[in-house]
Length: 415
Ligand code: SAH
Image (cartoon, rainbow, N blue to C red; front, side, top):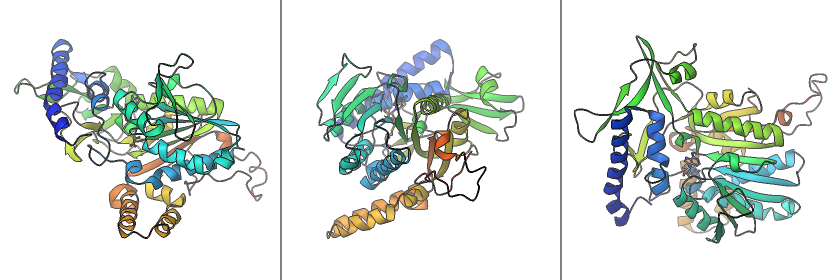
């Protein structure tokens, strides 16, 4: 979506409706937090960006790794299979994806599962997608099932269900809490960066939260203001030892990662999180994208993707030690460790068409080049403690570890 006459013609009226809604709200209640503004702009049920537009892909507002190359999803599929083998091939697993976008990543993973069908033949695999956008859930259903889905099934907590082209059941939910318990592999690719953040600014009088307000000088325009005093959020989210002058916190991400950690601790499995982000060092990263260009975050809310870097140190903290964590490591390192070079060679050998060769090399460069997506995207994993710890090692440090290494993460950064 995004390009094309119809979309453009619809654009301005939608922007006005969202802005009108926000101005009404600001007039009635006063300034709102950046988190509240972001939540409205992205996932308001009537006018939100993801609800209505969700322009992922070449013709949309932003492009993601799974949309660039099938190799990306294939290697992630192999990561899950490798974890499944490392934990003794459990009889069943759920693959749970948060914010599946167009469904491309799950589609590529399912192709790998299908190619390894003999290995998985005795395993009961099911797919669980957590998606708030009705528009994107339709796109996913079309991609994964060919569109044959059932809404509000009686026998499930899902709002929609279907069967993949390869015969695997797929369920859709609005919230991770609706996904049934059980041994699960979780996947969050460019999901946490879309969740609402709070912003805080250090001032001479102490920490103040950044708020969004109407601009009294310019009609129909929004502006940032600082809260006149400290708020419960400033008390809760700023650590006493904080050294930065500006801090972004995403409590929704904290809540979700804590849920994942609880579920993995209880039922086993693993979570793979991939996103752009930092380890608690960056300051102002809140930005908008529209038609692949940076877009003023306060302009035409609902028509642009709003995003902020993921703070992996905060995610690690919010696991509360329930699971071990690995990473974050750079995307190019993770993909290299997963064997992307070999996979590229195979695909190049399988084709004699120069246009295909060109395309394969171009997409490899997009994913791996440090100046493109190679360095700014990170991989981060949650794993049960027993997956990494070797209880015997303490006593016999020279003995060979029976615990297989976790694929993708060359250095085991145990934190
Ligand atoms: N993973 C995909 C899409 C990323 S865009 C890719 O990499 O291409 C973010 C996705 O998260 C969209 O599918 C959006 O609709 C969904 N999303 C945003 N906020 C959400 C929320 N609170 N709960 C569930 N899904 C959400």
